[in-house]
Image (tube, rainbow, N blue to C red; front, side):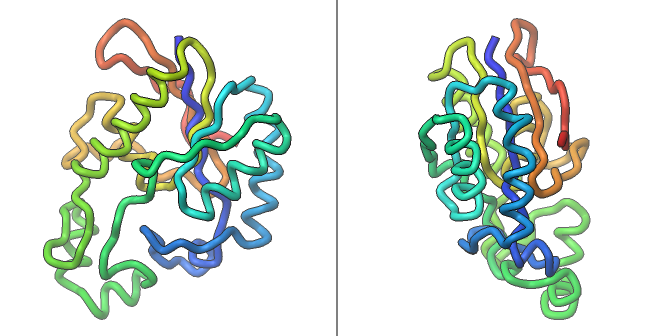
Length: 199
């Protein structure tokens, strides 16, 4: 059995301000560092053998807190990067609604807004889900911590659970500093969700 511990990075100033981050590479704030430090002991207690992170600073900083505690180097995987939100990045919901009302309505309805650079849900789900599958395959029967982002982890998990990312919205995004646990199994879809938004 492989166990994946999916850990969302701690808070950033954009999170605190309600701004869409996407690929914007900003660091954790003091609250985010405190969240990572508070969560690390419980995650270390799951006895991971690997830590794999998105390359974005907020995820790497979160991963490095666990790395220091557990004595495990942080690896990175480009495919764990956050979903791109194009022109929405840096905006609050009020700004999105005012500046791009048609695209905002489509996004809120679960559709992929067109022509503003938003990565389609199914593309992001395959990308992140594929990265999670690779991490699991290379880890054997062990526990691995993957540190990434809210939308990326939600869509990647949707992929692992065999659900259709364009019309299934059964997982709400994890809060900053929280984690999920999945385990591999023999029955389709090959993964079970043991816990979500833990911590």
